[in-house]
Structures are given as C-alpha cells and as structure tokens.
Amino acid sequence: MTFKALAARFALVVSCALLTATPAMAQFWQCAPFAREVSGIDLHGNASTWWSQAAGRYARGHAPKVGAVLAFSATSRMRMGHVAMVSEVVNDREVLLTHANWSRRGGVEHDVRAIDVSANGDWSEVKVWYGPQGGLGTSAYPTKGFIYSGKSTGDDTQERGTPMIMAALSNATRG
Image 1 (cartoon, one colour):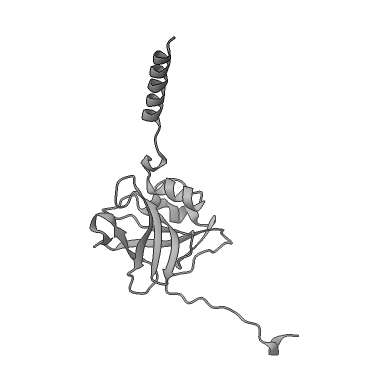
Image 2 (cartoon, rainbow, N blue to C red; image 1 turned 180 degrees about the vertical axis):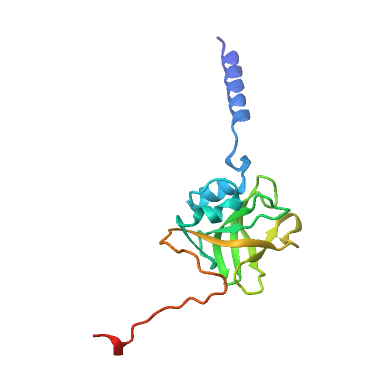
C-alpha cells in the first residue's frame, strides 16, 4: 500500500469518526433528567410528579437553597410541569436557575434569573428569564416549592404562610 493510499484511508476513518461524534452540548435534554443529573435528587417521571414523589424521601419547603430543585406545577401550557435547580440565591425573592428545555427545546441554560412574584413572598408563583425575549417572560408560573437534596425527616414541609416557631431554653429553666 502506498503512502497516499494509507493517508487517504486514515483521512476517511478520521472523517467518519468526527461525523459520528456528538458533542455533549448537542444533547437534547428534558427538564426532569437534567435536574436529576445536576442536583443528585433521584426522582423519575414527569416533572409534575416530583413534588409528591419527594414526600417522605427528600426534605421540601418554600425557601430557596443552592442545589434545591424548584418544582413547577402543571398548567394548560406546561402540562408535565417543570423542574429547575437553584444555582444561586440572590436574595429572598430572586434566584438563578440552571435548567433544561425552557427557552429552547432540549437546550440547557445556566444561571438564569427567576423571581418570586407571589403575593405572600412564598415562591408559589414565579417569573423566569426567557431567552427569546432576552429577559423575564410575560407569564407567571405556579410552583409547589423546593425539593432539597437532604433526606426527609418525616413531616418535611411547612405550610405556606405558617410561621416557623423555634423553641429556646432560657437560663431560668435550666436545672
């Protein structure tokens, strides 16, 4: 075999390999498998079922924490719900989300803005940055709350609007 023939075969093999290789960024993601991958929260099925599946398995609540998954309720426009991981807490009414399949079918977005627009400040309704508009979308979406990566300790949710009462032991009552 001549050098030219060998070089041609090598080029053909390399070309075929490059054509069949799929870069990681080209992967088509649905929100639920992506959220499971980046958060470590091992729930399966449609995003609309994550909140109920998490009961008794994972801690849940209504305060954002880094690494938690925000569970969106199903709506007529979003029939299977949506889940997104909190990548940063900016303040008590704003977070950055990392999620898939929101602005672009199958696409992944990192650190996009989401704000709590609920009347009670309980994260029951949010607006999320939408790529085609280059800003917060015009729609507000209902949510169920945050699923935390820590294991549940029983009754893991606090009702919205219910104040949390912390007990303290004063010096006067110590023995």
